Length: 302
Image (tube, rainbow, N blue to C red; front, side, top):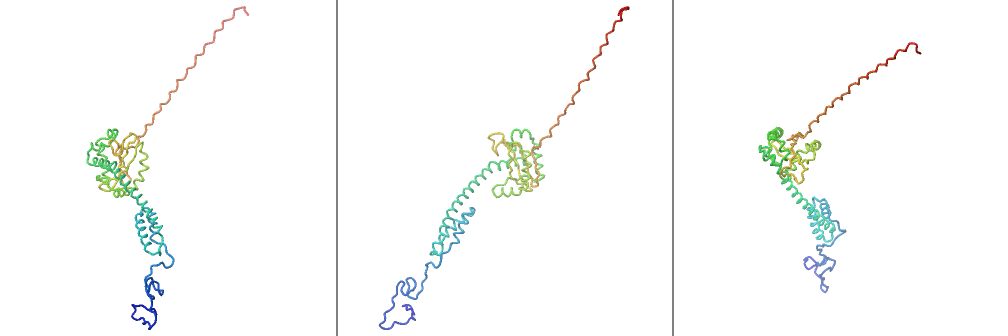
């Protein structure tokens, strides 16, 4: 039985015998402990295993949208691998996950910042001006509504036609309220009118002659609709939302009905009447000359 000075039940050494010596690794005990005393040993036991967290970190980093999660998992995997005492490996995977995750996180951040700037530009250049124009039509402020009209459209449309356009869309959707603001509200408005917009593409192609059709979602009293603004791109320097840029307006309901301010359907072409050709008068037959008279023969002559 192993002897220890702290073991009260250990047998006492016999007189004249050498007392046991305690020290590091004496008697096969644990590191730094006396013989027979098993201390905690953090040396690796068996084959090291791959860190699952390092693998997950790399997977999340490669998926791009979850790259920030991959970075966090990669750092946590490095900490666990370092504290495993050699029982776990995968340090290279964890470092790769951190590097790839940071790259994709930077890329996602750049896209988010760029998308936010583009959304802000769209709201300033298209959504807000169209909302002001529709609000002016709704409140019968004809002068303000005509600010975005081209000269040709303003001369073609009377105030009575603007009011008639207002009455038509009110019958279908109710009064115009506003144009949605914010990415979530805009996506929701477009999704509600998605089937109608698919039908609109083929129909609008028949009426677009050198114009650009911009669909802007609108919120109405009885639901949502799409305000289709036809821009005249034939004039250089005319930007969407600027003055004198609107060539025509249409309103698309969720039922697929298209209400125009000015009906772009071409008028039926008049069929030219072809005059019947006049036949020349028949020629009168030329008179036949009378035969010459034969003089009578002289008497006694031959």
